Image (cartoon, rainbow, N blue to C red; front, top):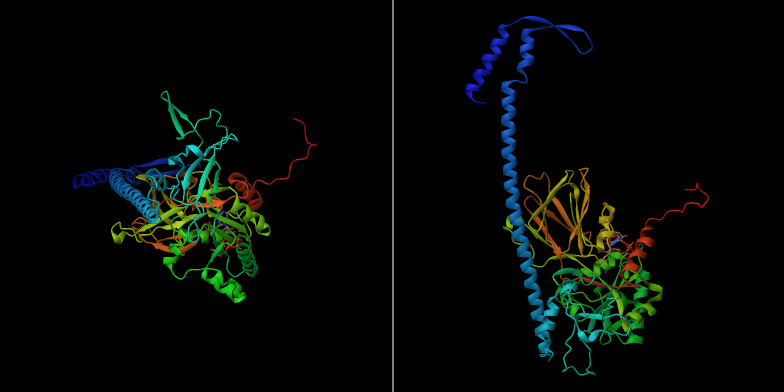
Length: 529
Ligand SMILES: NC(=O)c1ccc[n+]([C@@H]2O[C@H](COP(=O)([O-])OP(=O)(O)OC[C@H]3O[C@@H](n4cnc5c(N)ncnc54)[C@H](O)[C@@H]3O)[C@@H](O)[C@H]2O)c1
Ligand SMILES: Nc1ncnc2c1ncn2[C@@H]1O[C@H](COP(=O)(O)OP(=O)(O)OP(=O)(O)O)[C@@H](O)[C@H]1O
């Protein structure tokens, strides 16, 4: 308020005090009270100039603050866009490096005729929409055509058919069926532009089949720890694979010791001694076998930061959303997987980077943290609400005020995200779930975003507390004000073998694991309609 305004207000007030006339007034309950003109002047004064003026100034101030907040948000959006772009470039760079490494690998193996198109195929990160078509792979006999989308081996004529494969990964193809290919046309794109009209040429998610091109030779066992029954089953399966299929076997160092303590017969079993050897595992292992619950599948996936060999998960836990194979029938199940084409679910993973405010937008670790279920950002031990600003590519999504946020894959949709009210999503649906944990708001519904976006969750500077990120329920990292977590879909999914097919296995798991929508049927003898 200016000095002039203040003087004017004071004058008005003095005028009213001089007119001290008493009048009668009726109260709400009908009583008559005496109100002096001084009181009237006082009542009149309260909502008048000085306060009104203060309100106006407050409004002006809050408008200015809103403008500042908007500007800050725009700056943050710009930053998010730049980081999303940087993450995308990094991803492309990594794919390029992976492709070059693969090329180098094949040249060394004498496969210099490996075509450029095949290399490009590798860099296509197993993305179905960019997959190339092998015109020769259509079987035609069953009305099903098969598209080759990944080939993990050099196919050139230099390869001798009887070449000894020890130490080499078994080649395989991924094929996806397209029922109803009535017009006998090989389709390349999911969308066609016939005569200028946009038409969905093909449905994007078909059941994918994995077909070995030569028999797999090396199996890695990943087992739930501290369980005698699991160890006993592991020993039995290792023995069976060696004696009936002459397979090479890798186990974790802990399991190697346990097996050798049991019997020196297991001397042939291989293991690793350091992180470098773990990193090289994917070049040696044809198939992963997990013995445990969903946690064991998560653990097995976490061993592979890059490409993941196909995994066969035997159920030895309580729920088993990702473990469809019955361990009692392991001979039949493994026999089928080793010798015949089998359905797989390509489970996408999230790659996460922490960006510290102090580190001037540099990612904290070169290697991303990779999760198969979800990354959770919560309030940890803090009793304050978490306050998180979320961006999707360069767009502001929302501020989370509550216990936290779950960014989940579709595989993780039946885990923590489900408990927080997120939808259950078929694991082949290409999406990222954005599920709040106990939001302190009536209207914060969970979202499902497309899989190609980059998400950025930032602890703002005015947050009261810290936040903690955890990855598949493990490895908590503290995030302070200004720190951010950046997530996008990893180029390396986890191919898990299906007992029947993706959809049948998913529905079985929600029926049997969660008793989804189980209700007693109404009796027939009710009122008629
Ligand atoms: N409130 C919750 O529901 C809650 C809380 C914390 C963690 N979790 C989940 O636990 C996971 C870690 O699993 P763990 O086995 O190492 O820990 P754990 O041993 O504590 O098991 C957690 C439970 O989650 C189940 N689970 C794991 N992944 C699943 C999936 N994809 N679909 C359905 N159920 C799944 C497991 O079968 C197990 O019963 C985390 O990724 C998170 O999703 C859930
Ligand atoms: N190979 C492993 N090495 C270390 N830890 C493991 C390994 N496999 C599993 N775990 C951990 O052991 C815990 C229990 O594993 P898992 O979920 O498979 O068994 P479970 O709890 O009996 O099954 P369920 O969760 O279905 O009840 C998980 O937290 C998981 O991270």
